[in-house]
Image (cartoon, rainbow, N blue to C red):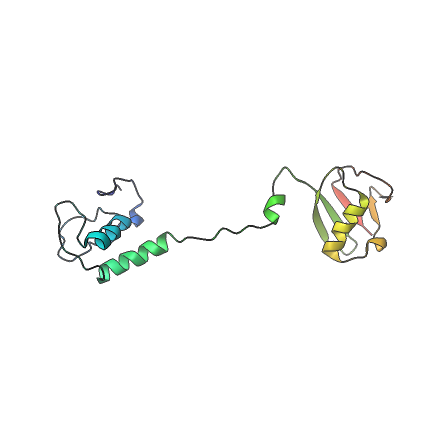
Length: 156
């Protein structure tokens, strides 16, 4: 539907369910926003050739304001650190423990074994010197400076 005041195409839910006054005798072709704004500014019905005086505190206007406020609720945007790692550009390592628990850790090619163990320690609270990382059945030694991209690591 198109509002006769702002001339914008809008959903039918954005239009008044009823006229602003019982004395108005025209179709409801005014969007809620235009009707509420005009009544608050001028105190009259905004429909062309309808100059009915409308009380700003009438039950109809109060209902329209309530519908309008619920229709366009403003939500506060929140920032989550996890949003940064959700991108497909970031590689991850999946680490599985003996107990069956698993953890997905952001990975970069220059990550060392100690850095990986430190990330595991932050999540699982296991002591780094007690961790043993295996890949493909072989122990990943601390003296290896760079890890290769792996699909799954087993933590023992």
